[in-house]
Amino acid sequence: MADYKDLASNIIENVGGASNVDKVIHCITRLRFYLKDEKKANDAAFEDMAGVAGSLYNKGLGQYQVVIGPAVADVYDEVIAQLGDRVVDTEATEATTSETEGDNGGNKPTNIFGWIAYGFKVLIGTITGSMIPVIGLLAAGGMLNGFLTILSDPKLLGWVSPTSTTFTLVQSMAMAPFYFLPVLVGFTAAQHMKSDPLTVAAIGALLIKPEVVAIATGKATAHFLGMPINATFFGLPITVPNYAYTIFPIIFAAWLARPVGNFFKKHLPVAIRSIFQPLFTIFIVGSVVLVIMGPVITLLSSGISVAVNALINWNYALSGLIIGGLYQVLVIFGLHWMVVPLIANEIAQQGQSPLNALVNFTMIAQGAGALAVFFKTKNANLKGLAGAGTLSAFAGITEPAMYGINLKYGKVFWTANIGGAVGGLIAGLFHLHMYGFTGSLVGFPSFASSKDNPHNLLIFVIASIATIVVGFLCTYFFGFSDKDLDKKTKTVAKKNVFKDAVQ
Image (cartoon, rainbow, N blue to C red; front, side, top):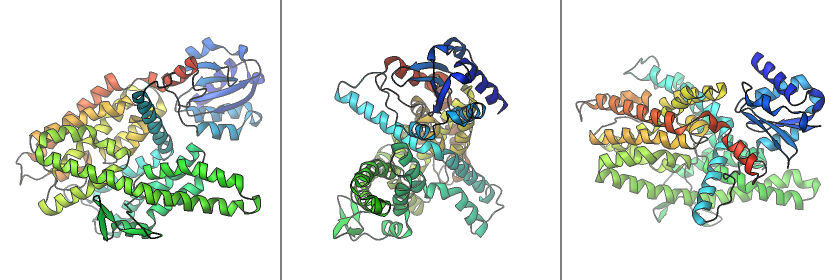
């Protein structure tokens, strides 16, 4: 905080002093000053100021913006401490930090492929923006789960029995953020998209309510296009998948809740609005998610699981290359959960899972990408987030690395996946076997058997090293630079197509 105090003092001095500041707010990377006279700001001073990535004046918004990066909230707090509450605009800050990124490099798409790319970019921006606030929880849960694996696995320390209540309680601490992810992400996604956070969180709770989960895991009464019909909704046969651990359905709900909620806010009398607005929103949005998203997710997941199974049966090495490079794309959209039953079935029937052996290296690869960012960035906050994401990914939980680092900075996700493709290819070429569920580096006991392959554990070690080295080097040299922290901000300011795209 001493560093932030000095930095805040320097920033205030170079925007013209405290007397020149009317208001100050912040977004995800920038301090935004409303100045009495913007000409008093010293642009040159910000070019070389430690802790500042640059400055710009947005004439359309009347804001002098100082680019900080991930530490912006801490610097903002210190600026407010020095200037006083007179410059605070809480409502404007909340609105700014929840905006959806809209930069497209300064140009609107001109063809169908451009619009598809733009739409995918906005989608990824929405997903990462919704996930960022819960990344710390996921990283903590991932690391705790990794430590528990080491403590409980009889091939490692074996100090805690997997059948004990201690194991159950500690595992619950670790996995609670993941199980209740629809609730947590529902709240943050609603903040991001300006719908009601509590209403959307309640819809997230609906999706993981024990009775709904029981329907999802229960016996189907019929099948349609490969989908299990396991429920009816006002007489309409529907399929209800297991929504635990998923994020895409609740992000869709957060998006839909805004127009639905605003409609009832506008048309309901004030006297009954506080009750009936959330009532109608929960019912309408919840119904749409259950009736539409469930079948869509199940249909896509079923098709993917069939394709994955066919690929592995056809050519193990080639499937290692493809699955190792692309599997984490399924994780982004929650489509990987229909692959999990394939893994469970393989382990139950054969005692090992070739599919899980390949998926394992996609986890390691995402950790390798975050590790490269950790070593390359000079930004202290980003370094801390990358370190936590790396440890979590190596413990078998990729979400903190993916959503906090790799997807957020675009190329990192793909350069890391190159490492996963290489690891998967090696695993396939040498017929690697995996005898358990626990994956990534902490899951090495799942490979500690020679009954199907005399060099199984050695192959795992070699493939893991190759995954880390390739993923790390590709990301370090081609996937990330600290310039990525503020590149989009400067592009937006220069082109001024989308007035104020938040990084």
